[in-house]
Image (cartoon, rainbow, N blue to C red; front, side, top):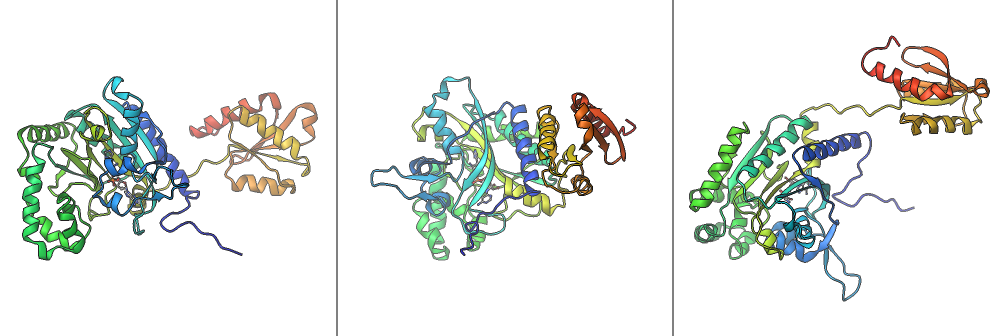
Amino acid sequence: MPSFKTPRGTRDLLPPETATWSRLERLAADLAARYGYRRIETPLFELTDVFERGVGEVTDIVEKELFRLAPRTEESEAWALRPEPTAGIVRAYIQHGMQTWPQPVKLTETGPMFRYDRPQAGRYRQFWQFDIEAIGDAGPAIDAEIIELGTRFYRDAGLVGVEVHLNSIGDAACRPSYIAELTAYFEGKRDALPALERERLGRNALRLLDSKDPAMAALNAAAPRITDRLCDPCAEHFASVRSHLDALDVPYRLEAGLVRGLDYYARTTFEFYVAGREGQQQAIGGGGRYDGLVELLGGRPTPGIGFGIGIDRLILALADTGATVPPEPAPVAVVVGADPDDTTARLKVATDLRAAGITARAELGRRRLGKQLESASRDHAHFAVIVGDELASGEVGLRDLPAGTQKLVSLADLAREIGRAHAAHRHGNTTD
Ligand code: HAM
């Protein structure tokens, strides 16, 4: 017999861990809504071009990590699984004429992304992101608003000690001369460069600052800094982002080497780290401004900014800090019966309870009443509904399992009675 397993770099999410996922997804959706972000869903795959142009051809994500789908026929267009959502969301913004909507268009998407990376702890081939995008606002106030939103998400998720790393990488006015200076700097160190970086140097020197190769650390530390070479409008923008963050009491650390691994960024860039775990590959989230991306993908020049928060890494970080996993909700009622064979009656009572909004499970195994009650207790149910001879007169037994009390209740009153008693129990009043 074959024994099938998940593909390398992927995993099954199982209960009870999935309860944490559901909680974080709800938190992300609620928080995004509170800040005025509306949900968008884009396909899990796009034309490869969307990523090659959007994310950039000379990036790890496109050069090495893109999951390209094999074309079905010779005429097929080339597709790839999305390595990140921003390019697809901007594609949708242009395709659906969102530039005619009130600006900025604030969108959020949470879902799986795919990168053909070398798997290791916290680095998967399928991973989840909570993504936020505000398209059509040049900032700088919204830059701070978005960074504050990210920090609040971590805090509400229960993760303490999150640090914001912040930088500005300039724009089309000041970056080219900086890149020329950076290229000259690395050219001078050519012999010390690892082969891949030497090859990249002629194409995009900024990428070297973002290198994962440990041999680059010292060279990068001594490299010229973009923040010392910003043009006046970029410097003003950056100063204003910082003063807005100060006003919101969001602490940050300036990181001149933070250029991000995607080509679409301009001006503000940022990453989130757990303090003390700041190495590359450890970022629990990151984002920045992408003022040229809409135009690059065929739209009118439109500024934008956003972030992606890695849900997998957030969950690992929560586990590391010993944050407790919330208990899974127990069924409020389990319907059991004196006649083990009468599954119909039990199923019907449970179905009516669910229709009335009560979380209920019917005992569908044909076992003795004692065993059925044991399983209700094991489930930490609040009530056992006992279907017996009284059903003929429209009544069932209602046993409060923690209190150990029991009474007869008419079927017509059952859901109301359970709902009322359960609400009182949850508010700490068990005298009912
Ligand atoms: P990114 O920095 O490439 O940015 O990814 C964002 C986050 O996704 C990372 O900080 C990390 O937590 C998580 N992540 C990335 N790769 C993996 C992986 N292989 N396994 C597990 N988690 C991973 C973006 O994707 C941009 N789209 C963010 C953005 C939105 N910028 C503007 N708007």
